[in-house]
Image (cartoon, rainbow, N blue to C red; front, side, top):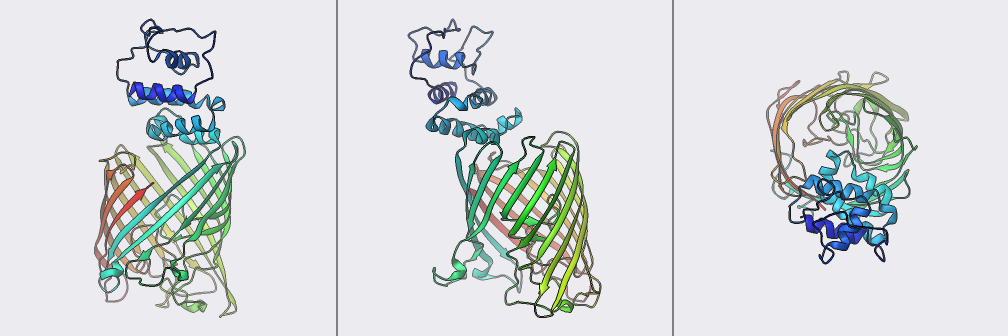
Length: 446
């Protein structure tokens, strides 16, 4: 490993000729060694110091953390490197991303210096089953996404992406059908104001959930808008405004306010103004706990009813981390104006969500895993529409008490396998209990 890292870094920081003032500081690297020039260049650049300042110990294997330290020091010299040399360091930074983060050097710092364009994406294949809802080929679907991200300068970053959306295996339509065409689900500009504490994001985000770090009961696929965020190690304040582009229920164009309940309500064209306050406490960033309050004001112009449908969604949550354990408790309320009732003629209601998790499935760590338990207590009408951010079906997310259990396992680097199952699900009103749900999926990053 030491030979590989030294050779790569030396190539990345190579100059046309060895500096006349550079001297070999190591007594165990003779001038006729294959590594002599590389070692001297790296020592002269301050990237390696050796042992006790005089021994290189070229035959000793180095740890990943030692390699990461060398990469971090190379990152500080990016302004001297060519495009090709920067690409080499970029690959090393990706390889040692976890170790660099532990050392307090974020890979995004490298991207700020490189000014390059990064292309990445994922592929998702899933199986979902629920009696009377999904079966046979309709239970299988897949999605592909690709993103490109460019660092314009130290303050400005541009990101764009396309997605196929989830395509069911049961679909036999022509590839030219509009429903099969990929669409732009991500197109935004992120700007920080120099201090790194203030950030502005303008454009389209591919996902939006009410309560960014909460359970994610109210979730939508795309939001066009602007968001301003202030954050430090103890506090984050977020505010924004936007218009949803997805989440429209099939076959539903407009609905009268009295029919606006979760199984029919269209979120296409729905606008929202929102704010959130988060407080952080406890350990470092990887293990800190969090408590927060969020509020959304949602509004849409219903052409059929010639009226405005508006509702408020406030919520509170707390997330705790202790060692390998993490837990989330979240409360949320849907409140429509103008006395709008749900399908049962009752006021829109409350939602209680909770999760308990052990372990963490990290895409960069093959063999890592987690297991979790989930509890939901959702009044009829507590889910507005769109999609749930979680694994459950969007058509079955209220009027029930339900438990869920699941596990995630990293089969290989950038490949995750997950399995989930609901149980003990009961309807809160009415006599028919919801059917249990099963889900299995593979997610692959590239």
